[in-house]
Image 1 (cartoon, rainbow, N blue to C red):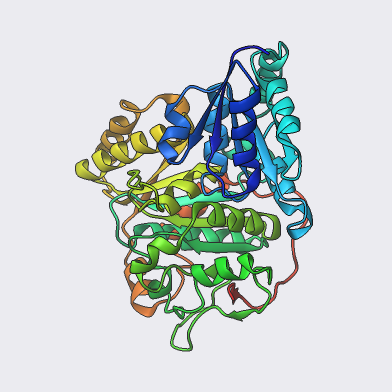
Image 2: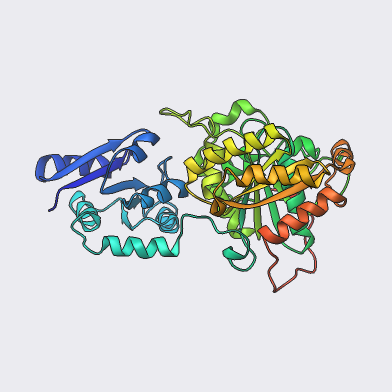
Length: 419
């Protein structure tokens, strides 16, 4: 067997200790490293990484980063748990091979060896996969008919800006007959419920709990807004944490599973994410893992910032952090309260384009100051008209072009998905 370095994500299942004992007692030329921290998974140099379907480190972003480094991935699952759903999830996330946890340590090592340096065809296969799955996120027409299915919207300086734009995006999409759901995953300042006077319960934790226990998201449709809210919401919603102190109950693996479920059941998922991306986790959940995981899974990312010099600088800092996290991909800039002066608008546009590579800037959109935005916020109602709304509609037309086929003649009353 060729010299092989294998990273094995710590697991309480028996396969991990059995594999470790087998390599230690019977196999030469294999170096096995047990990974207990997220950083070690991406910092160490491996030929193959072995991960199981319940590992908290398992998500699309991690898989993508490992693939970018040419590391093969073996996924282990329990075939007796949920009728082997873990194996299907691993395959959907893009691991190279799945192995049941019931396999012997020798059988598992055989699969690992097939993906290691001795596999002469691996580089060719990886090159083909990279061709099929480019690291740059497709946007607009490049994503094919209809564009991205999961859009993340971030107010890069905090506050309600991200929710305002996300709600307007959802209203535009729903207005053309698509089924849309908005999810507030902002673990620092969840404002979707408060902005539109939705009930705080059930919420994101309720949806995760429902999914965890197999009842399914949306099994019990609930009113999406409280009786005090005005206006009609034409999209579904999962509101954010009722208490931000509960952030440590969010697990990125569970959240990514939820997003996959929503992506499969709704035409569009619009996720409101937080402004912070620092990796502050140790052995437990990371402080901003919900935002990090969502951005990693998103097909398109929109950063909302004030149309000021400081707003541009904040957007550039945020964009650099997103690029460090997700790799090169196109990001969209939505600038609020843009001055009317064409000269000042040109200066703002030039400031962005001078500091961002053309392939990493999907587009710049100017969202004008509009008293209707403040009025809608005062009434806890979704915005439906005015210059701001029209500008968001123009952005959506490019970012997520309408499918040429099918228009739903009607839809059921909106509901909040949860327990």
